[in-house]
Image (cartoon, rainbow, N blue to C red; front, side, top):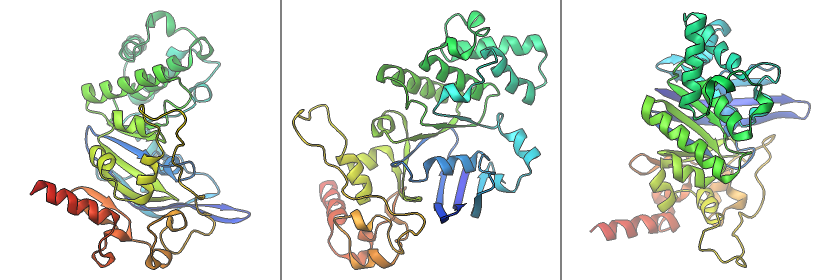
Amino acid sequence: MLEVNHLDVVFRTYGGEVKAVRDVSFHVDHGEIVAIVGESGSGKSVTVKTIAGLMQSENAEIRNGNVLLNGTDLLKMTEKELRKVKGSTMTMVFQDSMTSLNPTMKVGKQIEESIKEHTGLSKSERKDKVITILKQVGIPNPELRAEQYPHEFSGGMRQRVMIAIALACNPELLIADEPTTALDVTIQAQILDLLKGLQANYNTSIILITHDLGVVAETAKKVIVMYAGMVVEKAPVDQIFKHPGHPYTEGLINSMPDVSTDKNERLIPIEGSPPDLFSPPTGCPFVSRCKYAMEVCEHHIPPEFEVKYNHFSRCWLHDERAGVNHFNANKEGEETDQK
């Protein structure tokens, strides 16, 4: 349904050009939940905002690539054409519901706006649909709540309202940019269950942006790992946790606390810092932090290697010329087990 090909996005600043997104490619199938993970500054939000048509700022430039939604390139659409797509075929839920909602407008009216823009329903039909949607996202007393303002809702309820606005016109694609960031663990679980239920009931495709691998394991079918503006690994969720194919992914997984971890046991951090995107490395962006780094990593960006079926990694360790290495050893062990 969605196909992103070789996307490059830069920001022009007084200090030079920030290469925020570099050669990003992936696809999302109908009814699929895809998680994009990575630390702050990895390019997750810039990628999805470009897909959603929200990067038309003076200092942002899409240098290369295309974004195909059902075969139509969103990047070639006029603002008028894109307006018809946004809110109907494709919608977005932002992480800060308090600043995303209009504090001076009743919640029901904000949901109704999208319905009015993209459908031919009458005023009474629109109001009925608002109540129905509020029920679907689990807001009690929807008739009363529709007449209230955002400040009268808790954080979790405001996030449900944001999802209600996004779902008002039955979109095919929902982009959720860290929708559980400011919520406590119990409310996070409720929001994730809500998203999974909506995907199951309406076959809505979801792109979930997060830095929480626990959320990924609980929700997604496929995972895209980003680092320094690039996609470094793509894989089904079970494969990426059992057999990570990139040292950065391995580092993310190893740094997660476990329920069985002793409280006095130190967590395992990824040493070092991300590269400067004003002047990114000529080779692998992770080279300065990688314990498996080779000479080729410093000078050449690795291509995508197919580690397994539908599992891709940008790491030179998967090149047959690398010899026996950490990841190949894992692969050989799996093959032995299968035999």
